[in-house]
Image (cartoon, rainbow, N blue to C red; front, side, top):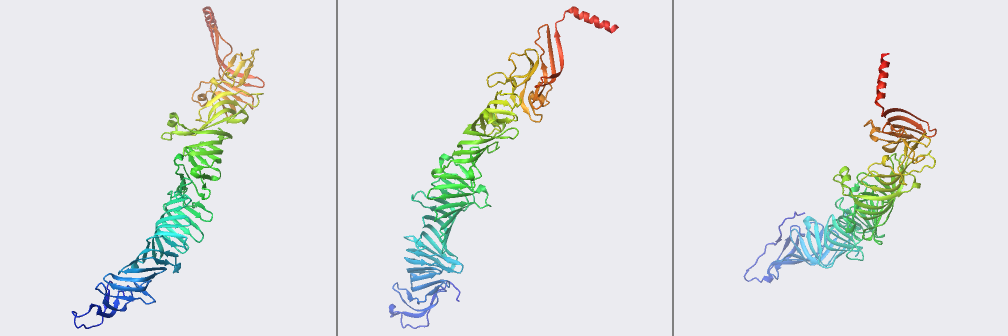
Length: 633
């Protein structure tokens, strides 16, 4: 093989001319050999004067063709040499490509030309499969040394895959296959890419834009940007993936949602687009968000989705939760149905966690309409957990956003959000809701997302089982900052508007009797001992108590204690007592530590008594004399 160089020459054997002056230019002919340094094989031809006064030739290529550039290309037809260079009319075959032109121009490193007839045949060369392509009017630039043949359409797009696809752009033929750059339309879709690749039964693209068309030319079913594409023509499906993991590259204009899900597969037979996230892809890199302005960029993560082009419905599944305002909403089956214009179907049997920071509240069986990124409506069953972790179901409605108070923000949310979700609920007596051990509640319950407990505005009743027909309800409010129930008994009012009774009292016959948050025998009965402090149930001692909480905590010594153990039907009391109403001349100040039984009404106590008496002066003198006399004896 002769090595390729840039030397081109015509070898002419020795010849003799009598006179150049008398020579007829048309009669000058030199037989010899044309050497093109490998562009063509060396061949014999006659040099003669061409119409442009240059020495050149015209040459008919043998039917077997000439190999070009010592490679895989071949030329068929005829060629010429003159001042316009080396030009050919005919056909060039290169690998699976075949192009025809009336004017191929040959250079040492390239061939250029234009033509209107050409094709790439579906063939296999080694491990490479070439696609079927029909070429119309084209412009050619072939760089043999770089193994690249560029073919660009000039008018109508090129026809590919038995007229099922069309390319407006450029083809690149090489030993590694067929690439492209331009706009490809096929089977109701359009691809734009500078990195197209074609095989016999499939094509691909990188850094591409891709659309699945609909009847509306301005509104595709799917639109993707900066994606990699693989289109399997034999099995009739295409896969689309973002070039950059985590980028929302795929758009559904009818649903008004975009997604970064790692792979979408468009099945042309079913007209559905099925999307999936591989297990090793972080869920944070697979998300959906709405482009509809009214939904305020609502977004959520998901593992799978399916878009039905016929119904224009997008079903998204594998959703851990959807954050709306400060709520985590988990739909039933972890999936939602998105209709046209980003209308999210009503979510049923949902789980709602409030808030996203602390997770104080859990609601189930929710029926929810997501309105925007900051608003949802509906109702749900609140899983109310009392102080001893008993759970009760309470229906919550009227979800809304309200400002967080400055006090709450200073305590818990410094630098946090300015708004919080609020919901309303209510319970009645027959619900038997225990808000604390052995304490029932009825009334309104308001849930604030940033508070650990519900705000209560209603009534509480002690769970007294041994008191016949016991039904004393006390007015009660709680801010929602703590779950334990502590009622200020000093200001407690019954549901009927009376001051609540508790303590030891004198009956009409002056016998003592005991009450514990139930009515006295007679409202006019005098009080022997009245408790003071907080009313609550102490589960370790199984006692209902009314006492000073600071005294109970050991933070001070003074204070009253009144405790009732229902199992033993016993009370114990500590603090000031009142034997009777005194006057200016005689009064007793006393305190006692005692106990009593509600069934037997037996009361025992140890008491310290101080008497304040108005005694005549003479009596003091007699007492002093008596004491002195006693001492002398």
